[in-house]
Length: 202
Image 1 (tube, rainbow, N blue to C red):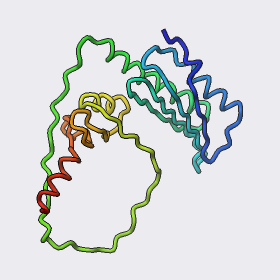
Image 2: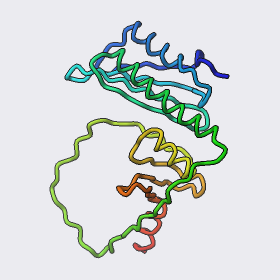
Image 3: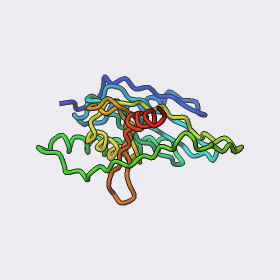
Image 4: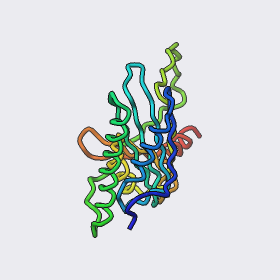
């Protein structure tokens, strides 16, 4: 049983803040002190930041076995408290994964509804308007992983994301699963939409 992740490589980086040795050791100790045997942690990354209003931000991303990625973040007035609260969120999400693994059957999922896609005819003239460029507040690295649809939904539930982009392990096309306002799930098959657009244009 994995009682502590003592050999887990942990990377601690700072943005707008210098990482002291005390902070680094504290963050590494907290990550390696996660006393859970599933999912097995392969690598961990900790990002620390201080915002302009002196709010301390801590984000932790765990790369685990079975293609599982768990992430959480917290912002508060103290960096040590931010790290503590973030690791508490991470531990709760790890327990969710272990609970699912121990169940003998998968929980029933609400049906996924494919949204109809409309492709406009090429003869419709495009209107060009001068619009201000959107402001990118935060660049995020997004890793697209091969998943089955039910795995994508489980991953979205655990990470609390509103959507997830993944490679459908069955069709090998890029898909997006998201939460609908009515509580069901919707899925957009980007590869299928692109294929339909090509057929309409030919």
